[in-house]
Length: 329
Image 1: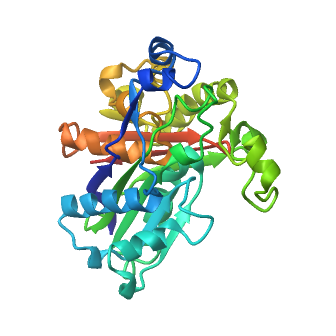
Image 2: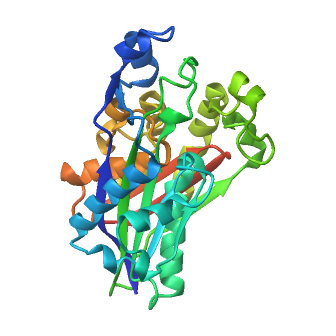
């Protein structure tokens, strides 16, 4: 039995916030944001929307693309670091929204921040291979609503992020050799560089937390940049070496959409042209765990994914964590 991606789908909110909009409320400018990040605008949820709403929309589009009914889904995994609430899992909320709670399929979340989708994809395929009779079609979703955990007065973070969701359906096939190969890892020594300090059991939310905004996202951008430009090329090369391949043998690179300048730097270190990648960060910003499936869906729509196409995907972020995947479309 093999595993392949049989469907893709994505959803972003309609509300657009441009750099010019941000410049009216925080000390920044369109030109500065564009030069430093490549971002022009991002999508932001309305007050009554949450992560599970975006995840559901992406899931329905994915299933429609795959030609599958929701009842055929045997497992739901959601990668998110901005859930509707601490518990229950967003995946359980999505299961109910899809109307398949009565199927009792397992549904759970994975939190590895911006590398989360790669972790979730790995877990999904592993469960399929371990129990093929039980898991024939696995819905893997990356969904984030960072707009509600950001400090909108902190220009070091608020200019980067947007809300969105992307999904893929993993399905079985008869080609035993058709599988996604992964390389994932974490370095907890860097866990302090990205996070939300309060809201868990270490620092429960109280009046002091709210006043100091410790329940909001923070990031040491310089440290994260250093980590990404070193680790991402290293992991990509290690995964390619397993298959005796070079970067030139890859048809399409899909990187976590953290920052356009970061993507350019990573590819340049490997001698890869920007023509070999596709980006969404310009119009959606950094959508964390949702960025890779959103970008994958764009590649599908623009006919960048053809049978036999060799695709390399890599996510990296909080933890510090990373995950790369090599597959043939």
